[in-house]
Structures are given as C-alpha cells and as structure tokens.
Image (tube, rainbow, N blue to C red; front, side):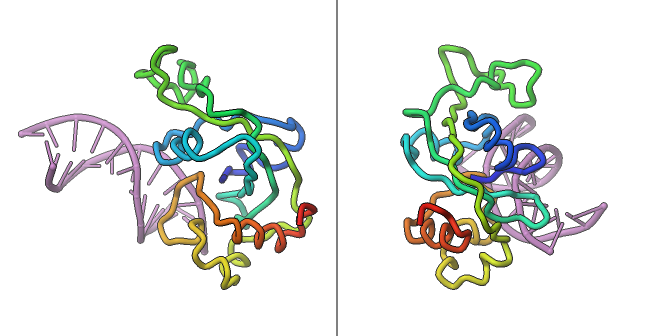
Length: 151
DNA sequence: GCCAACGTTGGC
DNA sequence: GCCAACGTTGGC
C-alpha cells in the first residue's frame, strides 16, 4: 500500500499504532480492500512521491472487514462524496496496524535491480494504483531485502 | 456505447 | 515542473 510520506509515513503509523486507510477514491483500490483483504493480512508500506520512493515498513490489517470511509460524509474534506449517504456507502476502507519500520529502506531503483521481483505489480509500467496485490514469494523477498524481523 | 477533454498519480 | 499512463466525466 502506497502513501506519500509527507501525508502519512511509516513513522506516523508507528506513532499512532493504527489508522483507517481512508481517502482511497479509486474503485480498483477500494475493491482490494473490500473483497481481497482480511484481518491479519500483511502489508508492505510503500513511500511514494518520496526522495527516493521505496518500501519503508510493515503493517497488518486490523479490521475484520472494510468499513465505511468517514471522509465521504465530511463536506469539508476533499474526499467528500455527494452521492454517499449512511444508507448508501460508496467508499470503504480497512484499518491498518503498525508492525515494524524496516531496518533497511529499500528504494525503487534497488527493487528494480532484483530479477525475482520483475513481475511485481508495483514495478509494471503504468501502474498507479495505490493498493496492489503481492505474490507470497515477492512479499518474502521484500522482507528479506529490508532486513525484516519477521523472516 | 464512444470518445474527447480533463484530472490524477507518481517517477524523474 | 514535466510528462506518461492511466481513470473519470459528460456530451452526443
């Protein structure tokens, strides 16, 4: 899952321990949260639009399932959704809990050098989705490269 | 349903 | 700031 560290970084998650992944306004990304993600799933936290961009840490899904994104009801939010009501929820999101900040930040250029990661969705051309699925082998490889404590 | 215009993401 | 590669909107 991507986040711009200026908006929300792995350090912010570490401080808060958990956060609602609100503000996702892309149907494909939303569908990953509503249909694919389950409590306990592990998440690689990626810093996008950073210098350099790369993988910064580990999080885990802490909500049983996706819940209504509260920002869709907030008229003052840029994520306000006029089509939404309490009976007609448009945007949903999961809650994430902090796991660890990686010992080694692995930058995007470094990820691109890894042959075994060449099929990873994140590295495919034109993939701007902020939530992307990973193969288990890719997840393990990323954790190894980053010196994760869970490997 | 098609498609042009526009908006967004995110690397560089 | 630039721009490729999307996604979305809205007229027809």
